[in-house]
Image (cartoon, rainbow, N blue to C red; front, side, top):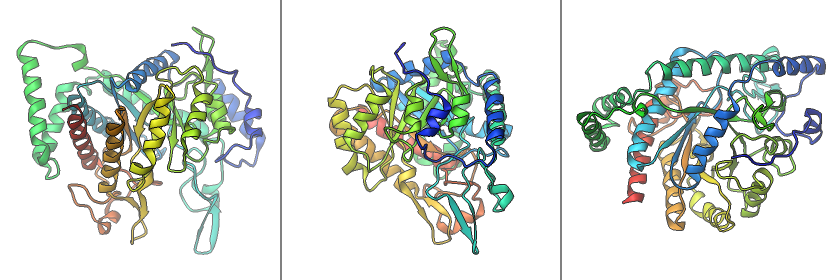
Length: 451
């Protein structure tokens, strides 16, 4: 749906706001050259695709669809392989099948990939053995290796973000168009998970129900296009101003600006200042957008952000992604939801159960407990059930690989197991089995809500 947006501010005007969490580049001329190069490149996505996603998220806001958003905490250039991309896509499709059946509504599938290369940091520096260097801010900014050369902020990395995002998108589209998303194939994978995994066996009854439903559809000759293809969109945090501004284009159909680095962009908890550069930039583009809201967010903050980012109250334009932590969500979320709902705002509510539940294990690894993740999701559902509002989705850091980064779950991963396959360069992700467990448990919550 068309809506008025402010004129796109210049990059210089955005920088003048004292933008948070930005790189410190040594050579402005190199930055300008990279920016000009990115401006000349084709968009990664199309404005019409962004509008399609806005319509789907409007259904989420109305309680007629559920959002599944997931992927890496921080993508790496080295991780852009066919195997990694396929595994992430596979687990998201597997989760979506289970959630669709339980919710009896469409599941909007949104990958946290093809652009998630930058991360905000709590400190600008990192110190090891008396040596202090710039903190790792994601491959879009600098390297993970703890050397002066690797940790230098390099604007040329933004060009590599574009190249690897383009490659990831190409692979995703090839997998989907090539039949990888066929519903029967995806359900077969879930059946194997239930049969072969100790963690999955508790979900045998639901898997059997899905099997029977599909057998019925086959028996009556039903074979809709939806069995063979899926709509899949991409998202990332719109953190680096040079990249996001350079990738913004004016749509020839409407004359409105879109940030065509991704379909859905969000503003994180740290840079969401009402008068900040990130709110200014995303208020000026026509993509569907999200804002992370943590335990320090007041209802007035949320209302002010909505007024700034979606003044026309367009359904599907704005998603609030809550990240309170399992211990705080039941106390902190109700006032927020109640007052936003009472104001008549059209927003989708989505739970990020990852970022509020991070802690350091005794071994020194940053980790999350699967039980805390699930408790926050349960708290999110409990609050919305009590208020009569719709728990619109989940936003999860995950991988399709068998990593050991989060403890607990049906595999009963312990802190001592973390070192066996800890691969994240930033925050810990749910592995393949834990991701599927989360889907089945969330499906039980959706089913309980509708019963």
